[in-house]
Image 1 (spheres, protein in one colour):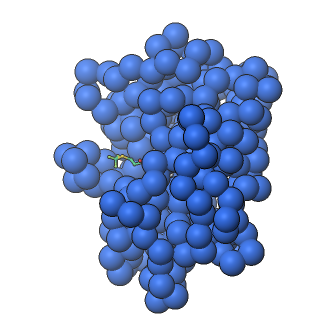
Image 2: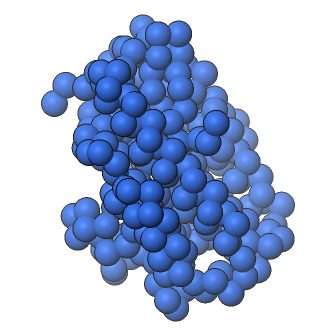
Image 3: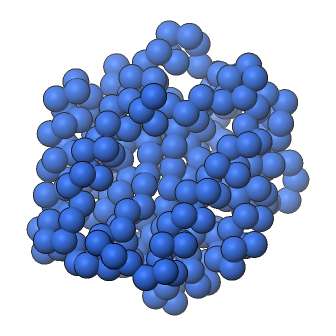
Length: 251
Ligand code: MF3
Ligand code: CO
């Protein structure tokens, strides 16, 4: 499938979907505290998304049961919200949210600290977020996609962490996952050229230890193979004539 170029009217819809995702993140951020379950966070998110006339993109996607993904500590992504997973002091939690409005999706992830966390965990969260912004510097027409990938990898590895390879970012629009795939490490070649109107979900997943991951028995939750902590940061990004616009950050 070719990379879709969004029209102005599609971009208007994607801004609204993105805004819904951004607001849901702000709501959950306020509710992240010791003692809350990931199921409760999921309920808060689902209700809020629906109040905003949107629907949770993840729910039912390939049978996924939750409205959000909530991945704690060594869980990388796709943690299924559960009543018996209760946040504890010192945990780190990655929340991934997708919302669909008027047929278009927004997708974003944040990693939060629960109370006071170790210095290593704090640095991991900061490096993961900043790696997204390092990649973002290369988002503009005529650049090559893998310039983004290379910038993310370089920053993460310079800080002594590793970038997950088995999962990648993606184009997004009327489908949650569209072309192109967006690796967070530099593949061979340059990748496609960026054009105004492309929309990209750029989402580095970073481990303190090795980059290898495995899947739990629930067939969803991805964990680090070595048990080290992992963080995730993602935004939906529109390529504009002179650079980019972040669609999943409240302006
Ligand atoms: N945000 C994830 C992604 O970018 C999607 C979660 S997968 C789901 O690929 F199945 F949980 F929806
Ligand atoms: Co995504």
